[in-house]
Amino acid sequence: MARRTGAHSPWRRPVPRAHALAATGLALTLGLALGLWPEAHSISEEGTELADPAPEVIPAPSPLSATPSAALTSIPAVPEPSPWRSLTVRPGESLARIFQREGISARALAALMASGALAKRLADLRPGDQLELREENGTLLGFRFRPSRLETLTFTRDSEDASRFGAEQELRSPTVTERTAQVVIEDALFLAAQKAGLDDRLALALAEIFQWDIDFVLDIRRSDRFELLYEEQSLDGEVIGTGAILAARFVNRGEVFEAVRYEDSAGNGSYYTPEGRSLRKAFLRAPVQFTRISSNFNLRRKHPLWNTARPHRGIDYAAPTGTPVVAAGDGKVVKATRNAPSGNYVVLQHGERYQTKYLHLSRFAKSLKAGRRVKQGQVIGYVGSTGWATGPHLHYEFLVGGAHQNPRTVALPKADPIAPEAKADFTRLALARLAALPSAQRLALNGTKPARHETP
Image 1 (cartoon, rainbow, N blue to C red):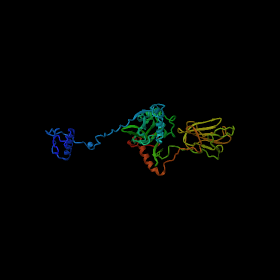
Image 2: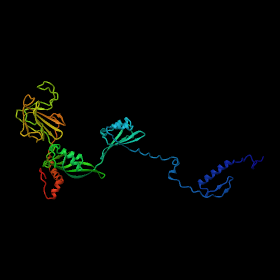
Image 3: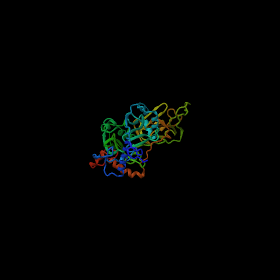
Image 4: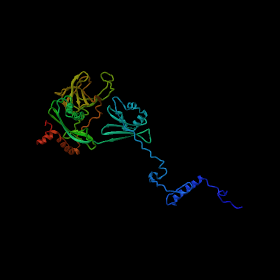
């Protein structure tokens, strides 16, 4: 039986239309991929060729679309850091109270204060101090404190250990310029300095330099004057304060006092006379030639007369009656008088912090009276047994800031002169700095050499 081959032959089943279209599309795609079609053609559903449409312009792919995942992956935006927020310390506020007011946890405060030595300075906040905080979702990320315009302390939460803060200190160096000033006192030191445009800090530093020689409460007289060579500090073109006084001349009641600042090899600055003597006076440990110490400093000593525990706030130096007693240091006589317990006694004031007392004297030195100045080693009285004393001796007391100290062990201020090896360098510096003072410059212009220790 012959095989039927026709449209209706069972051996040649018709291809569905959808399959035909799929096959045609596949063939077209393969042809384009293999370069079999030099030009693009349009094919109808029945396979007939149609007219070519207008070519479509396809833009060149961007570098990001070169990989299939690039089109699907978006670049995440970098989050902006949280801004710093400024705060001002109010009167009576501590850091704990500030954190409580700002809603910052006590745990964050504890972590901040445990960040090292710099954090200890946060305990000394003062009204008006400026603080800065940086937070995110209620969490403290950073804290900043500026003790001055030259220093910034920054505390940053550790990115690896959120329970800790790191601390950094940033220091800026100001521009330092040497300035001079000449001031005549009409009323008081500080008022005169203010009228001349000098800040109180500079006036206080001047008083501290000459405190051993001049009583700035009682000794100042109208028309006294002073001259300064000092450092002025500026930052970004703005004056922010003053530095050290480099040289000073003070004329008090016609007597001239001069001081020059000199730094040793370790950077420690002190003030000296033009001859190299220290302006910071030392004290004698024992202001009398004694035979023995009859009673030591003892705050629980039993009194020999009253048989009761009474503090002994000084040293008793036993010596024959009439033995000279000298001033332990340069100072001013505050008292030279008598009372029942102390007998004849003298009180000397040495600057602002130090005071010495001399009790049970047989008599005072000639012409000694309150208000007089005395020099170290000058005789102020004589050993006796006046007052509540069991024998001739000197009861000597040493006070620092109003508190009694053991004269034998208290740390005394040093008064070493310029070291011999630094004397030449100091002399050159002293001459240059004193020559920069206003009166010296004026005299130099007139061809006159400034005098020493007399009114110029």
